[in-house]
Length: 310
Image (tube, rainbow, N blue to C red; front, side):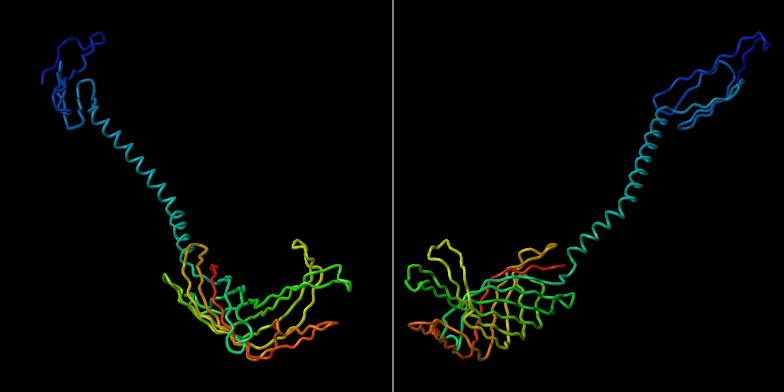
């Protein structure tokens, strides 16, 4: 290689730095050497060695590419770290939601309105009744197939309203309303199909029934409230109850509920009870009451709602 000539002393001019010219390809460089240098050209780096030292030059396009790659890797690392931090809490929330949806129903509660149909000797004296009932069920098994259920309810099987004189002169008249009711309660095992679009259930119970006849007195004005009442008659009896029905789920979420269609048979055996014909009015003094003593069995056909408790 050629070397420049001249005085190498203290006053001599410093050699000119090498100049470069870039060709069409990004990493191909030509080195124009005004004096003796050695050049090593690679794809992305040029190393020039001369008399006064060595210098390294990098392709600007490669530097930009490496900077972009570095930023991309940096952002990917941040995203990965954020995912690792948030993934456990997100997975925990998803698992918690799944547990809430799948957690079995541990108890049920509900209420119904029903039509009462007396049968047998009771049906000879009483034509029909209407009532309300409520129930609560504790589910023993997680699958909801077996439980213990309690039912309470009452049925009104007659009402009578008559107008009486409040005083002997009959200047003040009042309405006397008499209500004929039977209350019942039962407790026993409960079997049910816990899944499906239609969920049948059935059960048997032991309990009792309580018959009550009560009269109230109120003014003849419809807006007047009762101001006196008395119980005319009451009696109780042992009862066996059997029921069955279907539940139609409306919601199966955190608080599931369903429409409840059911039937119940209440077997009371013989009991004393009153009807409208049990009162024999007297010209003076209170009426004579003659109770009926027959079997007092009846059916109920109900429509209601049942709510699940998780």
